[in-house]
Length: 534
Figure (cartoon, rainbow, N blue to C red):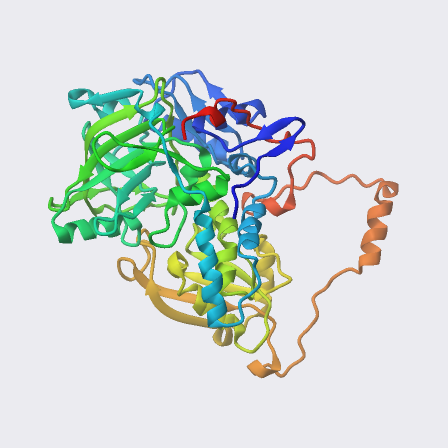
C-alpha cells in the first residue's frame, strides 16, 4: 500500500502529528484540552481529578503546576471517543479497520492456501518503515551520572495502596538478542528509587520473551523507555501485534507517514526522535527478581505483589521544557478502555482473516478486555458457534479471553444490553454452554492458578433442527419499516418532546455518532515537518 495521501479540507492539510505537542495544540483548538494552573499533587490528587473527568467523558488534561516538579503532566489523552478520533485523525474508528480490509482486498479465503496468500499481504503493512534522523529533539538535554535521577519526573502514585509511584504510559523498547527484532511494549514501571524501576514484563508479552532469551545467553539487555510521542505511536506500544512485527512500522502504516527514530546515546536501540523524555538503561537477567506491586490495575482491583526484574537507569535525555505523559487505570471505564476500543476496531480484519464468518465483535469495559467477548457471526451450519469459540480461544492474545458469547449476525454486539438480551433468550444453559481450559491473563486474580484457568463459551445463536432443536423458533419482534418512516415523518405533529437519550457509559458506543455534525474537522499544519531531515 502506498503512503497515504494527505487530505485537504478547507485549504488545510491534514497531516500526521509530529509529536505529542502538535496533538495537544490541535485538541486545545477544538476544546478538548483543559489546562490546570492550580497546584496539584502527583500523589493521588491527579488520579482523583482525572478519574472524575474520564467518567464524565471530559477533556484531556494538562497539569502545569505539579507539586515538587517543574515538568507538566499530560493525562487522559485518549479518554473519550472524540479524543480517540482526533488522535487517529479519522471521522469514525471503524475507518481504521476498513483501511486494513482494503489493503488485504478482503474476501474471505476459501482454502488454506488462500489464507496463507492473504496473510502474505500483511507484509504490505510494512510499506512505511521508520526513518532515522540525526535531528533528535529528545536529546536536546542529556543528564548522566548523579544528574540522571527519576526524582525529576512527576511520576504519579495513583491509588492509596499502590507500592509506590508508577510510570504508566511508556514505550519500553528492547531488541531480541538473537534476531535483533525490535519490540515496543507498554508495561507499568514501579519507581523504587532515583535510579531503579521495576520492569513489569508479563508472561505473554514480547519484552518478557527478550528477557528470557537474554537470560539463557547470560547477557545484559539494553532497554530504552520513551515517554511521549505522536499519539498513534504511543498507542502502538499497546497493540497486540504478532511476534516480531515492529510497532513503529505499524504506527507508520496507521499514520500514513514514517515514524522518525534516532539512536540512543548508550546503545543501538532506536527511540522516537520527537519523544519528550527517554530513559536509557538496562536489565540484568542474572540479578535476583524483586517484589513489585501491589498496583491498582485495570481490573478494578489491586494486582497482587509478584517478582519481576529491575531496570537500572544510566541516562535521561529530554526535550527542552518536556511534558510528562501518563494515564491511570482502575475500576472501568478509564482511559485504557478507549485504547482497547481502538485495538478492537483496528484488529477486526485480522480476526476475520482466519474466521471470515465474524461480522463484528466487542469487548465491553466491564470485561476489562479479556473477561468477556461478544461475537456476531453469519451462521451457516450446525455447531458453527462452537467453531468460532474455539477459533478465538486459539488466536494470539485473544486466547486469554475468559468468556466468549456468540450471537447471530443481526445483533449489535457493540450494545451489550442488546447482545445480552439476545443471548440469554436463546440459550438452554446445559445445552449451549461449553467449558475448556487454557492460558489466562496474568492479572486475573480469580483463576485457579497463575496465568492458567477455565474458559466458557456460550452459543447464543438461533438453534437449528440439525442441532437437535425440534420445536418452532419464534421470530424477533420488529416494527415494519413503513410505520417507522411514517412516525418519523409525523413526529413534529405529535408535539411530544422527549429528553435527550441518556445511556450508561458502557453503551455509548462510537457507531451511534452522538458527536455534533458541526464538530470541527481535525487539521494539523506543520510547515516544518516536510522540511525535516529524512
